[in-house]
Amino acid sequence: MSFFPSQLRISSSLLRRRTAPMAAAAAAKRPFTSCEGSRPTIVHKRSLDILHDPWFNKGTAFSMTERDRLDLRGLLPPNVMSSEQQIERFMVDLKRLQVNARDGPSDTHALAKWRILNRLHDRNETMYYQVLVDNIEEYAPIVYTPTVGLVCQNYSGLFRRPRGMYFSAADRGEMMSMVYNWPADQVDMIVVTDGSRILGLGDLGVQGIGIAIGKLDLYVAAAGINPQRVLPVMIDVGTNNEKLLKDSLYLGLQEHRLDGEEYLSVIDEFMEAVFTRWPNVIVQFEDFQSKWAFKLLQRYRHNYRMFNDDVQGTAGVAIAGLLGAVRAQGRPMIDFPKQKIVVAGAGSAGIGVLNAARKTMSRMLGNNEAAFESARSQFWVVDAMGLITENRMNVDPDALPFARKEKEIGRQGLSEGSSLAEVVKKVKPDVLLGLSAVGGLFSKEVLEALKDSTSTRPAIFAMSNPTKNAECTPEEAFSILGDHIIFASGSPFNDVVLGDGGIGHSNQGNNMYLFPGIGLGTLLSGARIISDGMLQAAAECLAAYMKEEEIQKGIIYPSISSIRDITKEVAAAVVREAVAEDLAEGYRDMDARELQRLSQEETVAYVKNNMWNPVYPTLVYRNE
Ligand SMILES: NC(=O)C1=CN([C@@H]2O[C@H](COP(=O)(O)OP(=O)(O)OC[C@H]3O[C@@H](n4cnc5c(N)ncnc54)[C@H](O)[C@@H]3O)[C@@H](O)[C@H]2O)C=CC1
Ligand SMILES: CC(=O)C(=O)O
Ligand SMILES: [Mg+2]
Image 1 (cartoon, rainbow, N blue to C red):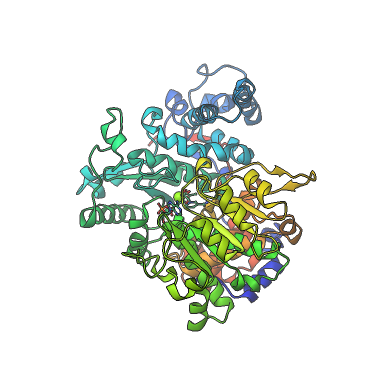
Image 2: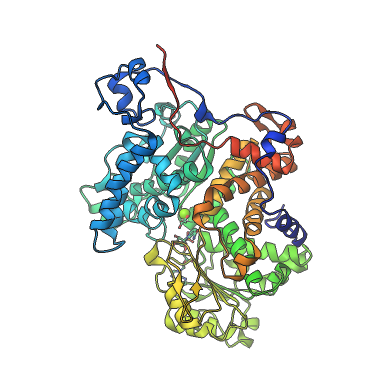
């Protein structure tokens, strides 16, 4: 099945948008698995051991009866706090930092917030996630992009308590037993990186584990995956970052990266080990350099429950945004195949987006070979060496399908290696999309050239992360191109106040709108693999989520404050597609046949009821 649905399916889901009433659970034929937060939790420890365990610790919120039950009386100040009071106290501390920091959202300021939040995570996970869920808009930029980039760059210095697992080249032959060192018998979600391309910051070696941790924080906050069942993983096969190789305080292997068969054998061993211990786990590959991203995806996707977020998650988010941009021009989505799109960056993310966009156009044009071939001519791809054409020596095989024919581009006055500014000047594209990792690539010259766009409302996607790597800022885009544009960036920027006092919307086009729902939907369907159709359903759901009035205002992605809601909808769409493709094997007491019987509303309710909420459970002690 190819990546994106026909226009008909998009339209019908647009009609269904946000129609799933929560009353559906009550109307459902059978009770769904209830929220785990309400069940008592059996613990096998007491006293200080409980206070020092972030999974169970409630700090001052332990009730007096619980303090008696768990031998905690006298180990805490006597005033029992509600979780709201606890958070209020914590926030006073966190906000004081904000008041005192005179330098605005500087790096040191953001890092200080990350430290405070991380320390909370280390002593009380429930409260940490409560703070995150309730203030996701404020703290996603701290636990995720952009601050997570800074955290990864400084991880060797910031490291205090271990979080997640490290599999290194030195562990070859040991991984099958090592996985049993992880304390949880059930793991639902693993995010794994080899640290070779962290955001747009390059090879950060073992320090890249920060990105796996940040992504899993969003799995918990947005998708309600139980934090006791997530596992961040770093596969340390060395680093080619010369600075880290020479740094005596660096925490990873100080040797050059393994390559070729040796590298593959390490990743193979890791996959075999984790799927042996946790056969139903889902593995998200994150921030692997392009060289391996596609190869590993092809190697594993038909046998394991895995996906590559940079290739597949980014593609879905970009497609949803591109369709939003078409609607924002006042045109029907079926006009998407007429859009001229210039893409800067032909790495794992850029090529992932290009393949998905081409397939989407092709489906809209009739879904045959001629349509697929014709869709190709809507794209111009520029990488570090300029416009990619068939004359490029040693063109990357993944980029080859998008290499322009000299004959075609000769007519436009372009040639192999033409600069981005030249390409934009000559093509006059509807969309300029950056996944280059080069901050400021959309220079004044490039944006000036876009003024001649044939679109009534050109779209600029400056998708590279973190903030400093964005191809341009919204201020630059709106000030040069005027008010009637669409702007999206990978990391968050503030909206821009326009000359007439209106708002120039700065959308965050980030795969965070899809990966949590893809993971949750896969988990709750029990799908054996993650198919193109499931990814396509996720992207379609995101595209359909935006209301017409929002789109007309230039808002093409939801606010991050609604990420839990959008994730629930995306997960339900993924579940339904898995069922439709006969891939779903069920989850816990919801078997495949029962899943099949659920209506759309019931599927949404099923997803919602299986999302973990950060609420203190009642703790009951039992001897082991
Ligand atoms: N917003 C989002 O959700 C996502 C954003 N990204 C961002 O995309 C960026 C790229 O990621 P990957 O594709 O994995 O990296 P990559 O390193 O595989 O690819 C980078 C590409 O940019 C090209 N490039 C370098 N300099 C250029 C220049 N001056 N002009 C045009 N192209 C140039 C390179 O030739 C290469 O093709 C990163 O900054 C990453 O943070 C990645 C995934 C998701
Ligand atoms: C967002 C993301 O996955 C990246 O920048 O790599
Ligand atoms: Mg990534």
